[in-house]
Length: 313
Image 1 (spheres, rainbow, N blue to C red):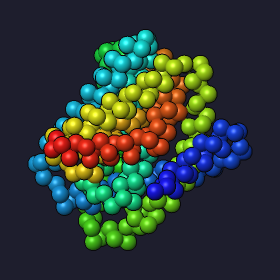
Image 2 (cartoon, rainbow, N blue to C red):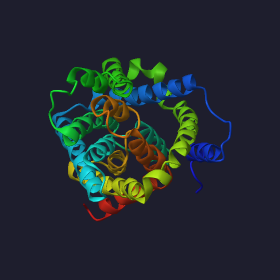
Image 3 (cartoon, rainbow, N blue to C red):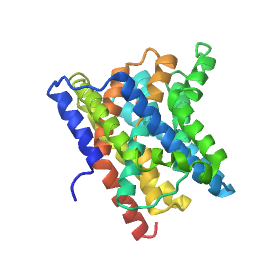
């Protein structure tokens, strides 16, 4: 079986950027595509959440919250072991404790194309994982300080675009219910993959611009950006099995744990830790980890989920 067309759109954008093509999407279109994807994911999750809300889901959400605390701590330890200074190690680690909504959109399409079912409330976990890593990153960078602008930081975290769209979609879907939301179903059914394809075209163009920074930051950053997703995926998959998630849910939580934020966390870190070098974080998360997950990681994480389930883990 060949590569999924949406992945080919990403490769096309990546190659076009690397050869210095004049191709680029209008900024307003990229913004619109992001909004549609995040709202579609939230709406779909909200519709299913209304039907599946339970004490079990609350317990799973708390475990996922713990995952969001653990991952940046592990990432910070790896980065310090690779001799990155404390401030930059904490800032990069925060990106890897959080999640990539773009990667989540791709794994949704990937599993759907292979008819692998998954728990439809997974968008709730995306929203949960966005928040704790930022707070942990700040504490790792400088502890609790009087200089930290908590009010502004709180606005950046909770009122930022990605969180607002995901939570807004979840709430609308949950309140409206499956029957009332039917006219909007194309957002997360027939329209989803075409929108995702154009989004990934732009992400390929953006990612190509980050790869050049490797000349400056060297092999250490690349080693971290390739190893951390694998570690995160293993932890996420094992947690998913402990939570009793399905094959698709296990692959999806592994993918979330393997991904790295390049939207919400960079904005929050610029506000909270302005002395950190943002090019380190973006080169790692967007220039290396995102392409790795899209091209190699997601199929690998599904195989990992299949292996764990085959062994009864």
